[in-house]
Length: 490
Image (cartoon, rainbow, N blue to C red; front, side, top):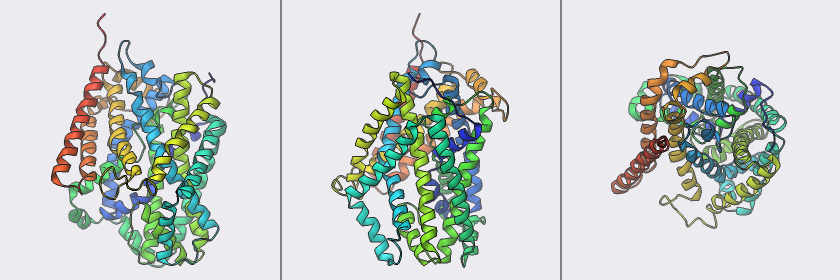
């Protein structure tokens, strides 16, 4: 087995970890919901929940990684008390990473394809309807989507094949540095557009009237959910980078650095998108339609729009690829730890697996479009996203916390010792009660609310059925975690 590597620098660790957290949701969702739920009022709520939710879970993942010096394939096995079976829960991480990549590689391919279209000028001069048709035509062409998804997969595994220092760290540092420079350039350009001030006011000024109209509870849950999901916690994508980290710095400070960078990108995305929408009288939207229909139309109206459109989709490609590389590294390291494989063998096997499992999501928009697993208008990608985002991420996060605080798990004393090894920001020892009792309740609320929101468009009977399913699944996970924590009788 290859000797385990470490990061060359703390800066590299922070950029790589932030690259994993920074994804498409930072751009196609955060600016929209921020403006929708009261601008700065929402930002304050979001930052509060980022500290209450994201911070302790992120430190938990980093601590499990650094404490074990292993990926999720064997991390619990090394840290768990003798005779317990927490290691069986590694499959949440493994399955979660594979499922996430089964559709995220396709979306990464979309970004690369649109960067190509903007750079070559193929979107320039098109009407609003024609720009919309380009996206629809792409979805109807499995060959096009398959080719660009394959490019995203090949590039990302190619980076990982070079190793942690020379591949993942070195190239992600370049991508993230360019991403930040591109974002700042795009934000400055948006600030110079006519009516940009109205966009900034919509985005940033506290609007408690909007909060009241949308409902205070709804706004709170929106802030809570986005703070929870923004850091990609729960499937070990952050744990692996903790395993490559030295003992010089306390993990609290490292987690804060990652969260600050992730939040900076999310906020800056709003400075790019919202003023541009107001400048050209377009209603800010969320999701794929924002990126692939609304924004290309805006670029077509701008002076030098082809340049700005090219820069934007190059930036989006970096955001997508940095996440893909991070998750691929988790999968590669997991099988290196579990099977004793070399990095080259693990890259090769995972390359084949990920390429194969990416096919159904691609075909779900065309050849297999009749398959609508979650109701009318849904596709295979929606099912895969639902399993990951609404189940494995929150439940995996819950299990990380429980493992770190339960006496029949790793235990809070071991966790806090690892978290506070080194210099820097100290993780508070008084947080034991919060992590043991309050945090699991908050995560459970996010989990159940996510289920309710996802199936809100269905009939009352269906909603009740899915909520019962969610509760059953949650109780099962709690039961499994308690069972795995029991020691065998001597």
